[in-house]
Image (cartoon, rainbow, N blue to C red; front, side):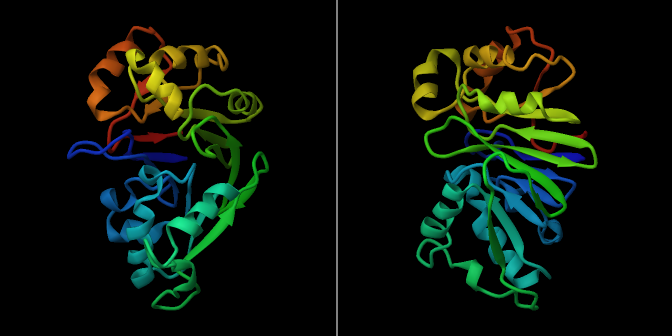
Length: 256
């Protein structure tokens, strides 16, 4: 699998983009920066977006992506997520108030509706756009899921937004072909109280998660640092002296 970083921050500035990753040019993980970072041609090549949860920084580019694809795509865009996430998108996003309901707007060139919504049942592997997706509920302020993406014997794990959690790591221990973990960390240790109430990690709480999944051959690709806290979080991560941790930057590319 080829992985490209479109957005890897917990906030936005001129140099920061919110969460969005691209797998093989076809599957997006969250949509915080899909239209901000992709050309029209690249947007039309997408088959699906899997959404970890319904917070705006993870779904917002679904609006402009649906609009662009309505006018230029040849097939519907599948948006997949857990039942609570899909319900939130129906009720509060594609609701003909905040944004048009593109599930009921046909593609200009024909071929079906612009958007198709698909519910992922937790811990049941389901095929989406040629990939096996397994959603695993994690610990956030609303229903949020980590996602295990598998194809051709390789797997990638995406934590989504989460604080300390258990089941995600249990599932990863049983996942064959795992090549990397996209793992969130947001605040410095001095703001652990804020991380706790908002369902995020600090380097200190992340250190305890490292003990739950001890394989040394699996890199942890770190995302979601808040822009105002970036320098401090990076210093605290370096003090963990943990070779598995790698900080992501916009445009980074990996072959897994």
